[in-house]
Image (cartoon, rainbow, N blue to C red):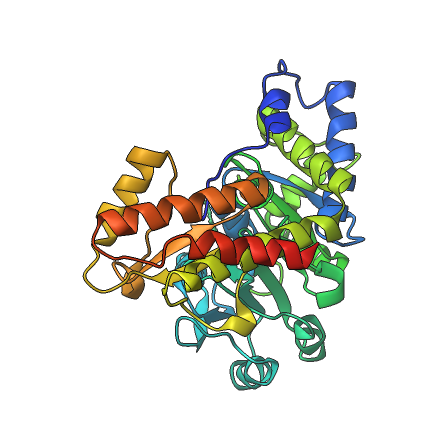
Length: 395
Ligand SMILES: *Cc1c(COP(=O)(O)O)cnc(C)c1O
């Protein structure tokens, strides 16, 4: 019950045990096409360019940024947690000029703040995290795409932690590129990064294809169409690989494709709304249970991710000892925290296959018992009662 990786749906594990196919095998190309169609549903988009980057979620982030942002161009990043810092760090390696919209951890940026930062910095690309698991806050993104288009800015969102758990409304947000991962709310293993790319972003990326840079004979870092400084993460090449041209690039990570396809099939069968409601109920029940133990939640109620809850470690309690006892005595993992929050909060997830009533109740019961053993005495039974009340009210 941490913030990922989490338990994988049994259907996904079974799908991964199927034998290998090469990426030109007709059975495999049919799976690839089917996977593209499934991830259009998952990303709530009509984008033709919707496929998988092979690698963990960070591979998707890096592919998006290295393919969108040209060396020397400006990248504006919302920095409101650890993953915002990661976007800036990757941008620096690309040679981008980094500008940040700095938001205190535990808060989110308003649309007005975003527009003001875009006007002030005039970036080529605007980048944000949807759900930053380091702070457990979800950045609202309605209207962001429209603002970016109005100012001629390309937009990128990392939705790794929310994809499959909260609405990642690519088309409604109007965002150009969104990436994710499987190991959070998709209920899959780490190792595949679904991505979706708007036509306008795809045209920008295609201008940067290495063949054209070679033909031009220009400085590859200069002007529009500057060469993408990565082969593996060159999305122009990866798009041609997933297109009807099937231009060879890398060996498709066969087992990961099976996993990504099955995770999306499970999601589409469940129904997006039902799945988001399942995560909402689990998050609300977890929050209510923690509060009933007298604990204080971290961050703003209005902007909580529904699939991971930050909670302050009560005074006098050793957070790492509690985590070790949860794991050792109950086989339940809860999350630690990073940076300024290390030692201050736990992050308790209810993601994907783990966003289930019995897992929430068992986790709360176990935490209550461990806290009592560690000298913090929550009111007996209150956490489970409060969580069950949330589930009953939702029925
Ligand atoms: C978990 C997470 C990642 C993880 O990236 P990996 O390469 O799969 O470890 C990236 N971004 C966010 C917002 C996350 O929560």
